[in-house]
Each structure stands twice: as structure tokens, then as C-alpha cells.
Length: 411
Ligand SMILES: N=CN[C@@H](CCC(=O)O)C(=O)O
Ligand SMILES: [Zn+2]
Image 1 (tube, protein in one colour):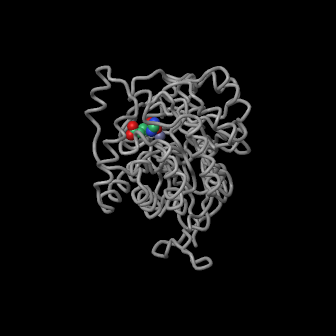
Image 2: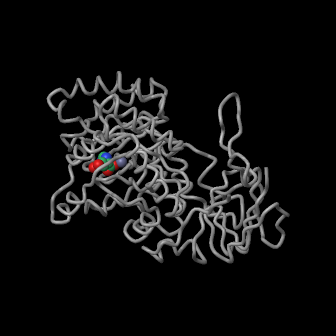
Image 3: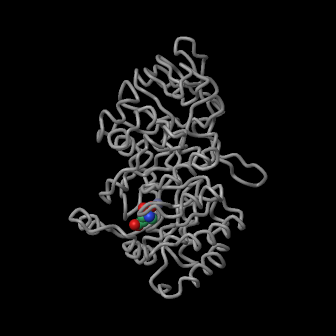
């Protein structure tokens, strides 16, 4: 094992309020970070523990002024640039084949989004080989890392058969994704259109049984305003079955209408309810009451790509709601893998400050995945450092569209 000092950090955001200026950003200037327990170059990054190969990632051992940094086996100077915690993208659909650019173009001339296009991605994904899907997934994961994302959640949902849902989750696990979500209840597939109850039985029975071994989370697209998605009762049935199978819960809710998704997520103590585009006053009250357990994950790339009104993040934060931001990278409502793009939208369009937006894609994303080891650079954290080719985190939204963020390679 070796140690590594990342030094000459002009501005360091730890997102740990016990460090630095003791603000929520835990900000330091002219700083350094010591990472311990890294595998030595050329040595296996895995250690066998009880018969299983466990990745050795190291951890943050010290944070402070560069001038008083401890010695280390290796040193990387970032030459005055800004370092922030690696972004945690808590909502993405990365296992799919096919293209829906024409659907996007039609939306830009006024066609509404209703979820019907999901069938196009399902057909293309079912037809794709394992190898094709794996290549596409790995490409998208690399694209995210190149833009500063170090933890990502990946959903199934473009298989909608027992075998295809299970293979999508298996491929995600094989690609090294730690946060995998079973979304067999994405939409009701065409061959079940007049047999909705039968599809819910399939999802909660054989499909769940085949998928649960590859998934940490269970999710549902709860949207009574769409004929393709699931109403409140169907969504409850799916979520309860997922919980029974040992999965923790997350919900696609209130995307197209102020439906029952938020209330259901709060009632079932889901980790996150995602979209929250259309909220009734009672939904905001519910999100405030359940802020300790349930995060409202806002996905402004979706509002951008579906030309919908942005949720009022300012009002949610002021009310005391726990807020995260994520990409929702998917072929339909937002084919962007860029957390910096999401940050820029949240600041420009949703009333968030640059600091709040950065915390929402780090601490917020981690809370939405119930993770305490990522989303910050406190002592003991996973050493996921994202480098900004800029003097300050403010540049993430100030320099919108410029590729300044990238995950730092410690190897
Ligand atoms: N709304 C449901 N699911 C995805 C979109 C899926 C698609 O259109 O392909 C979302 O989160 O926006
Ligand atoms: Zn989604």
C-alpha cells in the first residue's frame, strides 16, 4: 500500500463542515489532501476477503494547508486549480441501445413527452447483444468520469422481460456499478397493454426474483398522467414487493403531473423521489416532513430536454427539503451525462446558489443513495477527487458548457 499527496490546491471544497472554513462547503485555500492505503503502482487493486475480490481504493487520511502537509510516497501538484468531491450522479439509465434523436427534434417543435418513446429503446435494447450493451454502458460510464462523476446509479428499465431486465442489471454489476436499480416497472410493455395487472404480477413475481440478486434498489415510474406508466396503487404494489425482496426504494414521481409519487415515497421512506417537477403544496409539506429519510432529486436536464417548467429549487431549499441534483441520463428525456450542465441549469434556472448546486451533486447525491463514504472529502472518505481547470468551484456554472471538470486519476 502507498500514500499519495495531492497538493498545490488553490481552492479545496471538502463538503465536510468540520473542515476548513466550517461552512457547508468546508472550504480551504492553498491546501493539500493526503490519501492513504492506495494499492502500489503495478500491484493488484483487489484484495481477497472471505473468498471475494474487494477493490482497494484507499481513503482520505489528512486535509489541511499545503505548507504543513505530511510526507507521502507520491505527490501530485494540481498547480493552483480547484478540487471538489467527485460528483455523485444518483439517477441514470445507462443500459440501452438505439437512438431517439428524432423524438427530441419533434419535441422541440411542440410534441409533448408522455413516455411512449420508451418502447423504442426497449425494442432496440432487447435486440442488442450483451457485448453491444456492455460497450455502450462502459462508454457512457467513461464519459461521466471524464466530466467529474465518480459514483453513479444505473437503472434497468429498457428490458421489461424477466431475461432482459436481469441481463441489464447483471451487465451493470459486471461493469463495476455499485448502485444498481431494478426498474421493471418503467412502463407497461405493448404486449401487456390490456393486461396491466398481469404485468404488475410479472414484475413483482418472477422478474423481481431474477433481478433482486443484481440490484440494491427498486424503483417505479409512478405517473397516472401517462397511460404507459403506473398509478399510485400499482406503484405501491411494486414498491412493497421490492422492499419485501430486500431492496431499498426510490421513486420516479411527479414528473408530468402532481401525482401520488411524492406522498408514496415519503410514506414508504424511500431514499429518494426523483423529478418533482409538478408539486402541490401538500407534496412540499410531505417532503419537508420526510427530509431526514427521503431526498427530492431534481433533474433539470429533463426539463431542458422536454421543454418543461423547472421545479422551484429555491422554494424547496427554503422550506427545508433535502435536495439532490442528478442527470437522469437516458435516451428519452435527457441524453446528457454532464453533471456540470445540471449544475449550470440549477444555478441559472432554479434559483440555487453555486454552492448549493455543488453540494446537491456531492453530499445530496450521496444522501439520495444513503452513502456516507462519497460526496465529501472528509477524513476516511473514499478518495474521489474531481479537478476543475479553474480557480474556484463557482466556475462550474460561470463557465457553463466548458469542459473544466474531470475525475482525478490517482493511479
Ligand atoms: N420518466 C421515466 N423515465 C425516464 C425517461 C425514460 C425514457 O423516455 O426513455 C426519466 O426518468 O425521465
Ligand atoms: Zn429516470
